[in-house]
Amino acid sequence: MTAIITFIIVFGILVIVHEFGHYYAAKKSGILVREFSVGMGPKIVAYRKNSSTYTLRLLPLGGYVRMAGSQEDDSEIKPGTMSSLVMDDNGKVTKIIISSKVYDANAVPVQISKADLVDDLTIEGYENGDESETKTFNVDHDATIVEEDGTEVQIAPRDVQLQSVSVWKRMITNFAGPFNNFVLAIVCSTIAAFMMSGGVLTNTNQIGPVMHDSVAQKAGLKENDTITKVQGKKTTNWTELISAIQARPDKKTTLTVKSGNKTKDVVVVPKSATSNGQKYGMIGVAAQRDNSVGAKLKYGFTSSFQTTEAIFGQLGKMLTGGFNINQLAGPVGIYSMTSEASSLGIVYVIQFMAMLSLNLGIVNLIPIPALDGGKIIMNIVEAIRRKPIPEEYETIISLIGVGILVLLMVAVTWNDIQRFFIK
Image (cartoon, rainbow, N blue to C red; front, side):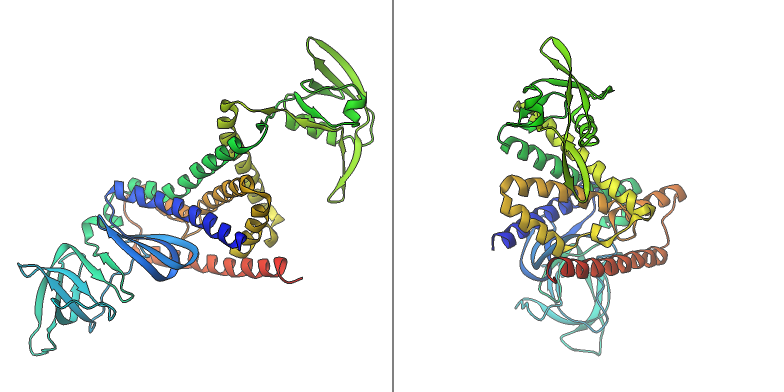
């Protein structure tokens, strides 16, 4: 149960933060956000404020920001639709009810024959079932529509649609989601750093604790000694230092050590250990830790940068022929990893969320249609052409992208089920 709750919270935070980026940028750009949804599927609860509807939906596996005029926003009312129109004192429509779940005693029953809620803001239809005469109703610019599932959202006139703002504002809106994920990763890493006992690991060539009865202790190495060279090769940070030692299992190795104001050479033979079938050397020293506030704040950035480098490294291997579907994880795989992190404690969960947030931000910037990266590419093409991409082409490109993502998600999910649940 703990794992399930942790998964829902972690996934929920990632989705909310990502979608809030799109939401905030859209609002600032003058784009109407009709709905901000957390979760997918059937609606659980809805709340309207300042022209936007906020919904919580049943399946906690995603979310979306529904912007007026976007391809995900379908607001067309089909001819023949039965509706109830709520009007103000001047006879202007302020609410269009097409849901059988909602009843308003003050509404006028109208069978809609034609509706233009984008440009003309009019509805044509037969009032009270009288098909002898078609009536035209003017619709208020800020009118709402109660959709079939009972969700009330604002209509989407042309002037508040996505395509009505500049291409640069659309580009910023598309980038804002991944950007928020990068910020969240830094915040999570920083929080984790402040929760770590003993401070954060540093990347210096000054050693921290020396293990009892280890190769390093027997050679006379002490905490705070600085190893400046390994077998004559300079080491300026912990990564270089540990890599040089790991490359010499069971080999006599000369370390140049600075202790206080004195520098000396120490000969050691790194003990051999095995991991994933490969041998590596170890002498029994740990990295130095820094418990200062500055180091912990810095760790949020450095840790995020190192994780980003690792993610791009894996993407590079995938693109150069080293693709393996086991390198990818869907909701099932993420749940399994979340379960493992939750068993290790809150610090590991926060660090795991930072890693997931970076992954989500980077993957969304991959230039596949339907992802944020694909949308940004189309924004760039439009900026270069100085005119919009034809709507039919944009729709086809997006459908191709959605198809690719669906196939990939099905393959990854099935692979996750086999990896984690079918032994």
